[in-house]
Length: 194
Image (cartoon, rainbow, N blue to C red; front, side):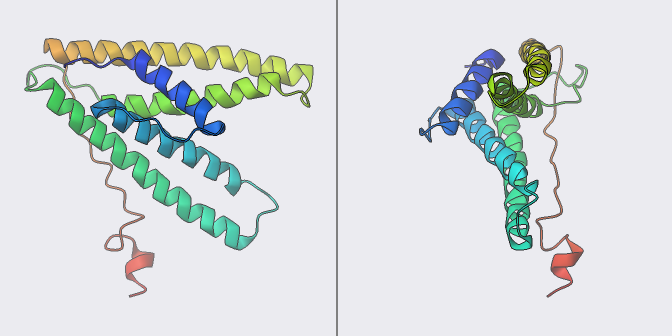
């Protein structure tokens, strides 16, 4: 299989976001889709930890715990982007070394689709919130239309990039994030305390 379907990935992200806000917790896929589900789950959890970090009533201990969770989830998110790109590089096979290099990887684009799915879900909630003003709901309806257009555009760009990679007219590389803050060998606060 040498296909990548950005619109199918976007649909999965919407389904998972809705399910995870309810009672259902897991959906399994194969290969790339399984990685995309796991990566979207990391973004989902990260989104909600970020909400907690903005709670003005949270204690210092609660904020510290949230910050540690955010760091862990962000590392997981970035690791999964790299794993998606590794999977896609294997799927693509030998790339045309003379083809122009695309600066953003498909995994990075899938990550952006994930964030857009979460923004769409929460913006849609704001369009329906009964305690909000009509102006608030209307402002969020306009935002929702923009977010949905951006996602369609990005999904189309991802599918086009993949078609170009398979055709040999475009290529991408695996870009390592090289996060330093979670590494006890690279973070001076961590290695300075040993």
